[in-house]
Image 1 (cartoon, one colour):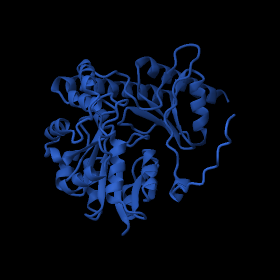
Image 2 (cartoon, rainbow, N blue to C red; image 1 turned 90 degrees about the vertical axis):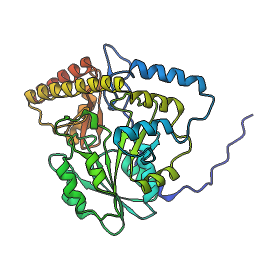
Image 3 (cartoon, one colour; image 1 turned 180 degrees about the vertical axis):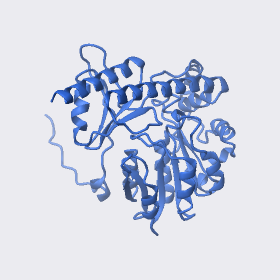
Image 4 (cartoon, rainbow, N blue to C red; image 1 turned 45 degrees about the horizontal axis):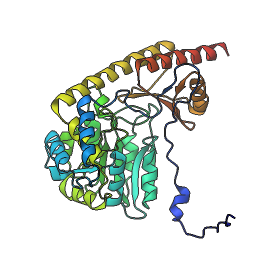
Length: 368
């Protein structure tokens, strides 16, 4: 006989009622013909062989807790960024580091300014920790409206999040744009440059954020191993911060958050030979992005200029319809309400299918 369960009477935080839910990219469903998932900005490449071997070796000590200080990894990252290892804060992906940042600087009722639409986790991280989100609409060309963002800063603002290249729309910020914006930000307000997609940026025009970081004590850089390095399933990312903020991030992060396998994979990814292999992959993504974008523009599409490993279709209220149209033809995209649709640059076969589906959509529209 099964006992009748008692109803819950626990009290949840009232802030949860207003939190949006994070929507993960849909997996590719089973069906006839090839099907591709290009909804999550994942790398189409598995980790390099040297990274795989490092993870296998690390399995032998998986019965032990990981190095909570991630000492070896922080030393390697410190050398790469030209900072003291103590200025590197490691956690389970850059989204977790962003959450640590909110916990470290935002008290209940404090404000966090960010562009919208941008990374979907921002309002969730802010609201779940008692902060107040101040989303600033993107410009007509789907870029950060830095003028309005600067004007949105008040006495309650503690943090500004700048995603560059911006996810999901693709445009990026230049060195000069960031510098001018920082000149209008009070020095006690932290400005986070979320560079999850930096490696896919055209190397000739990418912002000089290392120099900006050195010149501004209120700037912090957020980076991830999930994208170019292909370690999305192992969850590891980091911040490059000035000493006081770096210590604060260490105080609030989850103990043992960066697992031993993830640390081993990230450390191997920092080896010069592996970094060279990864850069070749990033260059291929950049070339594919240009090829696909050129093909779509030839069809008549008007798309934002993307510096990420994705393209954005500003389809407004037709977004869900376009995503469903693509899924019926074997391609799973990421729709954002009534804003637009994002497609990751993936395997060449998936990219070719995207071009074909977009052509079919345009032809259907022309016949309507």
